[in-house]
Image (cartoon, rainbow, N blue to C red; front, side, top):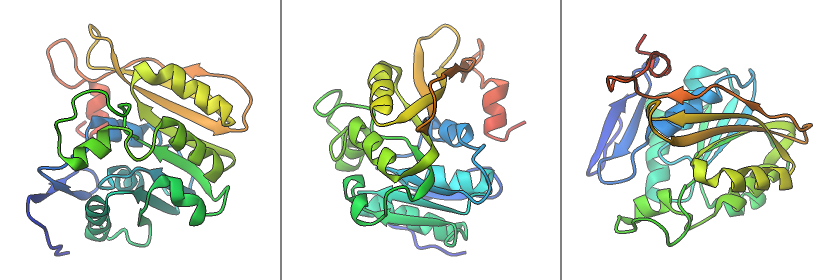
Length: 247
């Protein structure tokens, strides 16, 4: 399918079931965190209705469409130009019946969807608190990386409202925010159930944390074995290669 590209845009082959994505070379491009989250959530059940809070260019919904038998996934993105790329990527992959994009702030979703409308929520939210870290970036990157339009608590509160009872919540974030994440999840009746730390290699501190929670579940947290991205020689580990469909 022929899709019109705008200035600085390119089409990247995801090397998975022929899926592709449109990205802006000068904007915020997806990273390994989104790929890992889509793999972490690949066990979601057939016929599931999913929403991705802060979808960016739609990488997580696109991969979930390839990895699962979900019924519908809605990607919510506040930036109009970025949401437009996600919409065109959905069309590029012939996923318009499965992957819908909503250009909106997550704080306004209560005006669009009824409470308890979704079986699963996924999110790769901005990691950095407002006014922290390097901020000499373009507007798209700032909004993608910093809690400018919504903060961590907002994402978890919205997830609580939109999730059905016993619905699943999947998030990737930074380990330094782990206490905040677990505390806010429990406050909002999303019980942390599975946690996995992601390391660049076995000699470094963890760089990411993957978390699964279930709404109104009983307390019990399973900590999975560490996930290492690179081996001692600087090559992708076998587990990462499998996630990227390389072996």
